[in-house]
Length: 262
Image 1: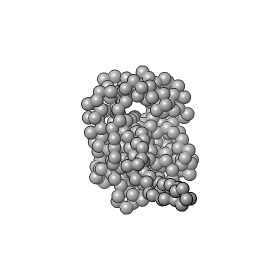
Image 2: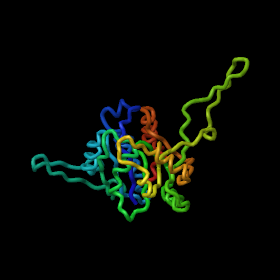
Image 3: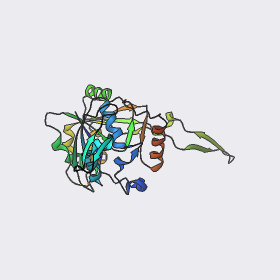
Image 4: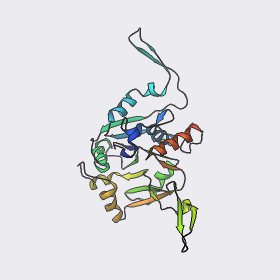
């Protein structure tokens, strides 16, 4: 089954980092967040990826062209035509198949999705999709089973965002009550991690202004073709520099809930 990862956005809320690299290439530890996302899918046996490229997509291309050199030790012999010997693997070998597709610099997500349609074989009724800036610990096998059981066009993952701020309530006398927000008080949001039937392509036009959530997904939900699977485990989106710092701290401390692989 193919896994589509949206990798084309500018990431303007992280300009400190994305001025120099696309957001999926911002690192957690020694590897870009894109690698972490793909390791998660690979852990569940989903190893065929289609990356929808846009902003600074050449950096993602270069990363995979030289993937072994980015992820393994090697020796280079400059006196012998720059011969490179890649040394042994550390941990599980990544037997991925990665297709990189230029979906346009200014395209919205719907247009990017439409432009990868030729790379989904006609015999594949379903594919998965996520964004290149978030990690979680969702059981992807269970996610696919949930989708097959309800038989609708789209499954979206409902997640509870981390609560960054406490809540202040004012009393009539002017004093305040301060309480840290609880996860149970939060509304669920779209965390990505979709399972999608290929019939969705019929709802999407090939034009840069075509979005996915606004328009096609709304239309499908109005037709009763969208189901949500709740995920109350870990989910974290790299939206701002503070998110990058938080994820890097988890990784450095050995407390990264999304690291399900060895």
